[in-house]
Figure 1 (cartoon, rainbow, N blue to C red):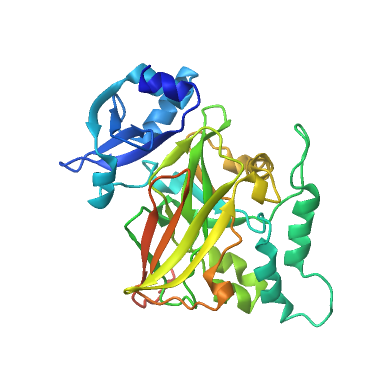
Figure 2: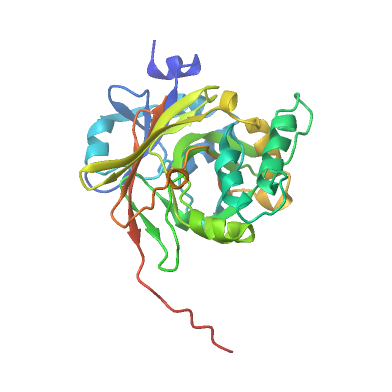
Length: 341
């Protein structure tokens, strides 16, 4: 049985973008063990997905139709730092980066504690009310519309970083904190139909101290870089995903906690999150890519960790085989000079 045929029958196909020895990007199909296989006839994952949509095929079927070139040692490429983002857009301005919060069981606790300090009355904060609305109505029956989640915008594709790259915190930031989670990748077809390309590990890097200062600064706190894991997992996401989030400072591990994702650990279904993102016409522009962060309940800041420049974030989770690793750096101070025309 060929690799393509096995993928068609349900084994987990992963797509990566890997630089070869000459620096050219190759699209690689991988089963998570053994060698990966360079996909013929495409120069990027975006190109592959566009071809699949045009042909009316699944990604696995499109790969089968194109066939394979050379084998590639994926784990060696990871060690050598040759794995890029799992997908990118020729014009990063057409890669929309957004997400939803308070979507995971337990995710409201830290946020609720953060905001209760500024609240005199003993009643649920807006964060807890938002979370509870998801618990009550975030997993509607097929064909029904569920509760609307919290939503935020992070920027465009220029904000995205691959594994091994630095996450750069602005000089004015009060915090640079990790958010270990999963993200969905979507491509808008020629008629405005959103297609889910796959899922990847993600670090939805944010400024939690700014958010804590005033909940209305949530939008500011989210305008930060973020990183995507190396593998784009094709097909259905397991209901239960369990991983580990850790922070290394020099030779020491200063934070290590498990995190959970997948619909069994969420207060919203993925379909409900997708509906509430793509119900807006502006997010269904043909040819655009989207990454949507699904949220997390595990944050080091909730455990009293204050990150420092040079700290290294590590996120891993089954069924993903390769970790997402990024170092925290801080940008040089800059001024904004607005001139009159």
